[in-house]
Length: 329
Image (cartoon, rainbow, N blue to C red):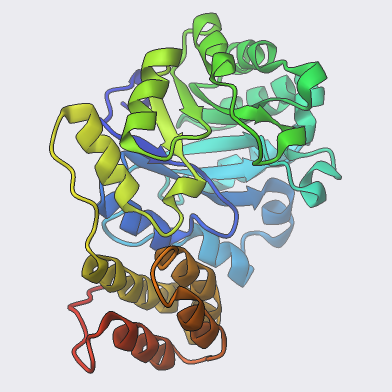
């Protein structure tokens, strides 16, 4: 069971809005991600729409070959979170993850996401309602606190454990930091000492060495990786190698480009051609970060609307001419 921590050595893919869709998850699993969590889904929005919108269909979509995956819900009303969890229990995910960490103003402005770090009692109500509503595990993701003056991750973690959470992920930044500054791993260590359920550390894990150091310094059970996985699914291969003592070789340029092409095909299957091409713009930018000529390729990809045009640009950039690498979906 995942929440007894009998999971493969490695790291999980953290939930990221607009990033951790089925395509990104599949590529991460193929490179060694131990588990993943979906983009966040509004509990109230799901209940009101009865799950019938195209956006929800896309968010719930899973490719064959994905491994253990959680579905992340956000919301502050216990009744909506519980009802959404109940309806989604048969959607093919392994657990429900509750979001108490999103710092986006459009989320916190409604008293959701990391704004709930200011309301531990409300968090307890949400977690208990979800845990009572479903048979599969409920986990939570929190931040260190709302701001430096209110670092309360330990308090919130204890409350979540008492309310029925089976694991807790801690992003060791406050909401006021957003994604800047340095993550304070001592908060993860304090949470680990305070609860009996598994604790997953998050924040500033950018390499295999970082993952090993976080595990050693904090005592957390596993690490989860967010922004460092953007355009870099190989970080999971690197972390697994660091944890097992295996040799690790960074991906060659040809592998990076072949993966970008595969990502394009997956995105088109998931979203259709028009939206798939639009979604790929940011992913292409991530895949080619730091590569000579990247700015010109980004400009080219941002100026086309058809998948074949994106494919031709990527192949030309990779020096493949008309020889497409083997890409399966």
